[in-house]
Length: 304
Image 1 (tube, rainbow, N blue to C red):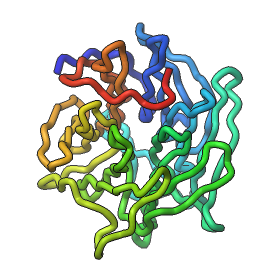
Image 2: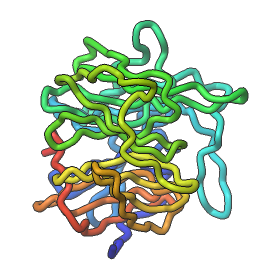
Image 3: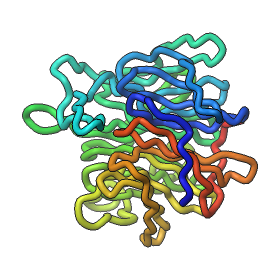
Image 4: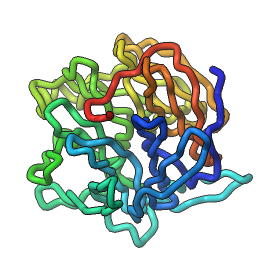
């Protein structure tokens, strides 16, 4: 790929969204903000989210919805790189879902619990055609081990949240197949892409056997998976850590890897007239790249 650097100096960028005006709005997890990056690389703050804003998506009302981990990372600085530590700080109490009004920058908390149980570290989200959204809770590392993660579905008006799969190791990126019959979830520490078949909008089919879903593929060796975007043809493009870059998973389990010069490549989004413009967040170096992708990405339901 011919990667073009759009900007740098970002504080662990994630959650990129290609906007109609050619800009990209993304989260800065370490900075606790939503940031707009224009094509010439200029940066402006859209909203102060606090905590750790991670995933972001445009909702049916034109607002941006943010999965905020609540500040679940201790930041390590090593050789000029920024890397999240393995455990959450002692001050971490949990995360939440936020709604951000683009016009005013007003931030409001939509959900911080499900059935009386606090969310741990919300990570990524995707809206379906009905205007509801699937989101992952990544869990969090602790001094004694790990708080498990989960897969949720929620309504954008704050009226309902449902936990559909629990006790997942480290669910991260989430996306829908083009026909919206499958929810894909990338598990970071397993290096595995899961597929969960839908029985209807916002409803998973029953779990079959011991596994929570269908394993599309496990990457070999030590490779961690982060956030993702789906192509129009159905491939799932997952940002890959350690083997820095983006791994495109075919639903049949075959893969191809596209390298990026950052060991902690965290996300990708698609846009442009033909949906072949791709923006990639290189988080440990604080950079945003743009490239031409070999195939068109899937247009998200509520992006202009």
